[in-house]
Structures are given as C-alpha cells and as structure tokens.
Amino acid sequence: MCEPIVLYRESNAVVMRCPDCGITQLAFGTGHHIFDEKEFAQLREKLAEESKNARLSLSPSQKKFSVPIKDHYSRLWLSANEVLELRNVVEQAAWIGMVKGILESE
Image (cartoon, rainbow, N blue to C red; front, side):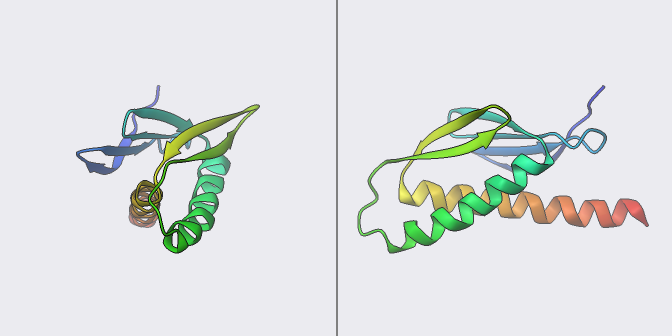
C-alpha cells in the first residue's frame, strides 16, 4: 500500500511521491498527473526545454505542453508563465525528494 510523502505544497500545486513504488503524483492547477520515476525525469527535461522557450516568448499566450506517459501523452495547456511556475514546482519537489532520500539512507 502506497503512503506518499508530500514533497511540495502550495495553493495551486502539490507533488507527492511514494518511497516504496517511486510513483510521483502532481496536482497543478486543475490537473492531476501520475508519473513513474522515468516519466518524472522526462517531465523535468521537457520543462527545462520549454522554460528556455518561455523566457524568450514575448507573449504569455497559451500553448499546448505534452508529456509522454506510458502509452499516451498527458497534455497541459499552459501559458509561458505557467510553464515557468510548473518547472519551479517540479524542480523544488525533485530537490526535496533527493534530500529526503539522502537523509533516509543514512
């Protein structure tokens, strides 16, 4: 039975990870997404790439953001600012998860 730990919590975002199975749950805005470890790493890479484009964007217009998950894609419609915000959420959660992993292994 999974007992996820909260890695990040703000008013519009929550990231939880189960230390036993490695599943990460991300609630951002109105969406809820579930990732295995590989998919979460892909999300981080995709957000890093999209964040570069978002910083160069002159307009905060909406755009489609797709993340591969198993045999389908999770699609989010995010503005440039939301891409940057989501990247911040995911990076902070990944960092906290890494620190917790180090502390638990000692």
